Image: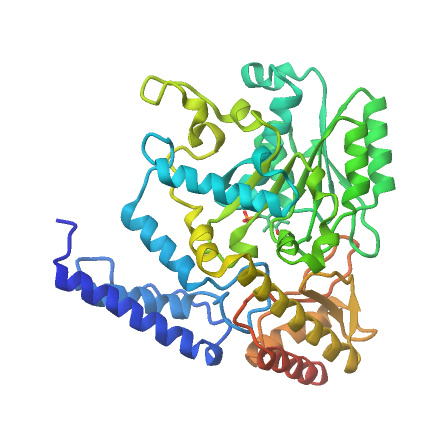
Length: 458
Ligand SMILES: *Cc1c(COP(=O)(O)O)cnc(C)c1O
């Protein structure tokens, strides 16, 4: 029952390996956006090979393949062999990371990896606290809860009644929507979030932040948390971290840097200045599933505030270890938890930080190649950023209808997949993000050709 005999199991894993190899070999010529849901007749007792094949077939047809070399979309990445293996190993051993008592090695290993990531951001190794999360959304709400629990010691027991005031959260208008959602989840309501305007470069205007915080403080509200974004979703803008840090320190507010994707700048010294000031953050969101080619579901929340996570999450019960505060379940939204950190550890153990740095340098060079090619054919770059993301309009033509038509045409011609985000100033732009370490110069050139062809047709 629920078991396969050994030969069938072997053959099935072999089938997966063969198919995976074939898929990677042919992906470059496959459609970059087929995405049709064709649920086949497999929801009954079925031959294992048939069932597996039908799922893999349906996946080929039914997703935008974010690991396609010409997927220039949001911050999704292509996984690595070691990331996939890490997931398989974690599923096979299936350790329970709620407690050290059940998972001494995985818990210690995750702490090592989190400390190593924290160091990349300039935290001292022994001050790094944190937890692997399902992604940046979980990390951002965790940061807000840490800020609340630290600023209002009674909050854990009395909830919002303990606040006696209105805590305010600040994020740029280009900040991620999960910040507003976090405010709702925390019971503060979305109106607790002050949306701070951005300049033409899409970075937070610190003068506006200073005004908003001062106004709230004068009105008796508490400037609780500033979320600075390092790598906004639409354009990759990095908020001015040192100036924001100065303001948060003045107001004793918690500084959270949402570096879900943009944290990848910490992987190469040449981009280190882009993140200067991040070491002053009380907490940081970082998504290895965006920045380090890890499989989906790999996020992290780092903090250098000892005890902050425990103030939010620790519980003691009769069925968990007495000294539960040392255990991961006391620091995480999740209770039972999978060995998420292995997806970072195993690739790091083999490729090292140097391997990730090389991958990023390749992405940076390809983004530069794209910028050069676009400028040479009369496209206009907007909201430029040092990160491998390129936003542009068709010369003077920046109307949504025209840009949408170009994107549709480029996707239909299989030149690449790219979105047309709406920025908070109402402007639209085509957006190409190079975030796949398997993307090559030929893919960028094909995107350029497709763009140049599309603008003449639509
Ligand atoms: C993607 C993203 C998030 C949300 O992270 P998930 O991993 O999708 O949950 C938050 N903030 C920023 C800046 C992001 O790019």
